[in-house]
Length: 340
Image 1 (cartoon, helix red, strand yellow):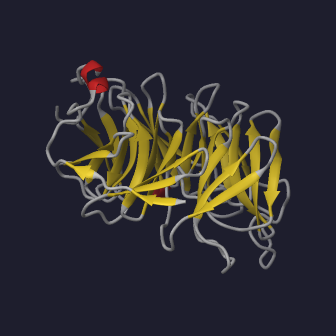
Image 2 (image 1 turned 45 degrees about the vertical axis):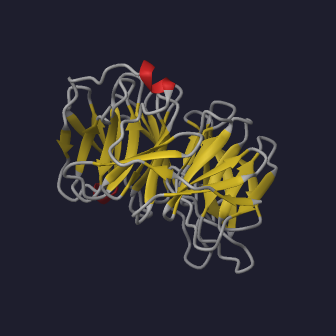
């Protein structure tokens, strides 16, 4: 059942309005740089902030991952290059044992803080066989997340089907399940749900009888899908504090609980909401065009323009209540503190 919810937008109001959780938010830090300029044409997208304060940034146009220290120092890590497709980084995920995991073209890998890569690619791609023809290869992964068993789970393609596998730096890649369907998942489009299952957004389904939707996969490999309205284009997804999943789609923020009940909250004057994350104030925060938005679990929404921003993509929360933002068009990482 699909419910359309009305979002109340209050321009310019601080996030603490009517929300007692915000009253306990620590004062914003003044030590972080306001903006970090990356090399030209970096096209930053996904962000991951690790516990030591290091910010990791996927730079799709440079085929690299930037490592930004709390001081603002930037270290570039060009991705390893095999004989296959260009390693264009898309998704990032903090590793349980330090460093990060990433997806890039036909490659999945791990980058540790020292700059060492462990990676797998699908170099034996054969034209006409379809992406991911090798059953032991990563087959063009798009998204990944920390799974219910504390290993990295990722999705990829194999002979016209969608496959979910897990990755381990010592044991390699191991299939979880293969679905007899095909679709794509956006970077940031997978997350572990409050029910211990994997939840993900489904785009661009090639079977005309199917529609875009939200998918769920249990550790046992049981799969279920909830269709979305036509041309929803679901993007990123995150587990909320209310035992539900929150996601971005075309011009709205969506919510689905673990029973499959759907709601949508339109975002005013928005081209396409991008990333969404859970803030330390237990609200959902998202990027859209040149603005940052906040929505509570009751649907109350605030939006703020970010000075100088052109095309905001990734968002990462900081414990002091501020956020790191990736400005794709300006090749800049911005530090944003919401007004009170």
